[in-house]
Length: 115
Image (cartoon, rainbow, N blue to C red; front, top):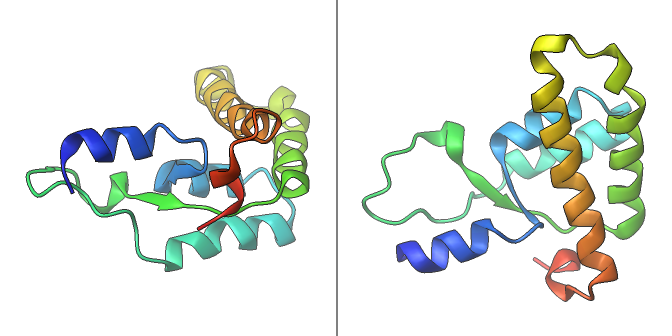
C-alpha cells in the first residue's frame, strides 16, 4: 500500500489504532470491551512497505453500529472524572476520536458500518 492511500484510510473514523482499542476497552463494560478487543484478533491494515512502526501502531478497520459507538462514548465520558490529571489529555483524545466516529454516522459515512 502506498503512503497516500494509507494516510487517507487512517483518517477515516472507523479505522482505529491498537492503542485506541486497548485503552478504550478499559473504560467500557465487559461486552463492549470484548467487542473492541476482538478487532485486535483480525488482520491489521496493511502498512506501506517502508513503514517503520511495530505492531504497536497497527490500525484496524472496525464495523461498529451507531448504538455501539454511542455506548462507547457514554462509557468514556462517564469515566472522565476518574482519570488522573496526567492522563486527562489522553482521555480527551480518546473521547474525541469516538465522538468523531459517532459524527461520521450523521454525516452519512457509509464506511462506518462496513468492513
